[in-house]
Length: 246
Image: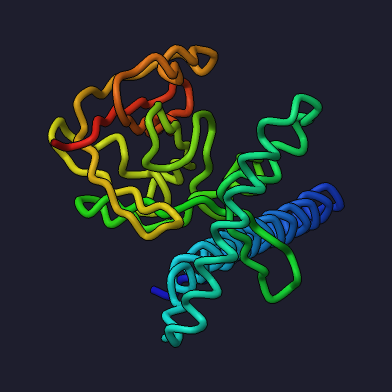
């Protein structure tokens, strides 16, 4: 018995055509947004890596000048240094010295990037356990925090007082991202511009509200270093207090 199969013809109505066009447009918009977001993420990662290269270059060039000088040249340098020290002492004793002038004699060095931008740094921080090795900028801004570790409060590296350092938590291995994983007894090494390295031992770790700056106090005995970064959710600050290792 022969059977005749008859398929029902599907009519494409104007409404169906309109919906089909809308779906295509929405798909193209979604695809475009996905491409844009991916490109932005890749560029941001590239930009962060490029900026962190500046800190790496500073560390590499920090103590690279090992020029051998003759005895005559050394005697001349000693003489100049002594005269400079006398001038600085006299300068600091003048009653009319302004705050801005005093800042000009602080212990900083300057690195000039290939684009001509200058960065003032005061030392180097190394934390062996979490592979941290960065230059320390003499002050902080949001832009500088994208490049390296910054002094938030306190005096010069390896001097009496509490040197407070801040760094970004990118939730990866860069800057202070791994600082929250430090434990009591871990070592933090600070090198100043005289090439002196002092080891500090972690003795306290806690979190505080972002507005709480009690840990930046300078009422400490001897030398201390305080490391500050964000928690992973950025709602609090992780504070790691360190004392000079005896």
